[in-house]
Length: 145
Image (cartoon, rainbow, N blue to C red; front, top):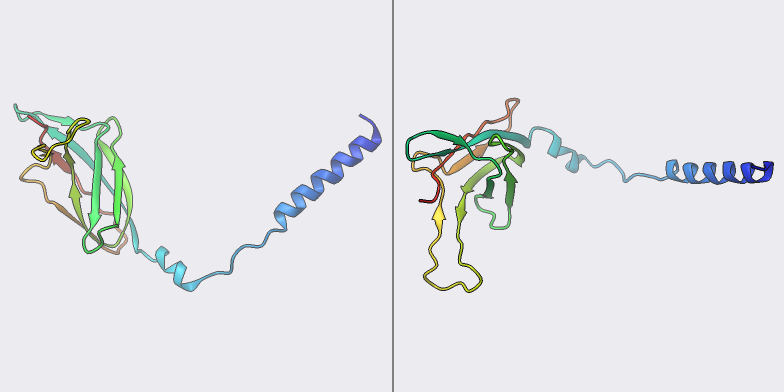
């Protein structure tokens, strides 16, 4: 490599790196900083299927949906790992757990029946509160029979 090419590459590198470091960030916002004062909590839990013989099986790959009470468009969806564990970050509030399935095929009709997987013993609502302890919310499902 010639001296001129090396010098040219060095100048190009310094200008690219210098311009990246020279970028300005947005100003700090007190109101935006409020989200870090305990308003967001990590919720964890384990999801199991309760089989007919009462055997508990991890619900690996299960999709979980929840809607914040009072906010139709505030929806979160997560999926369990292979062992049925999940984690999600939620803002403080009350959330309704929705674990349903409706398979109507390609031509849905009015009488297409759906199935709710929640066990009758399973609480439908999760309340996320501000605090130092992250909530655990285990979920028991009954598979479609």
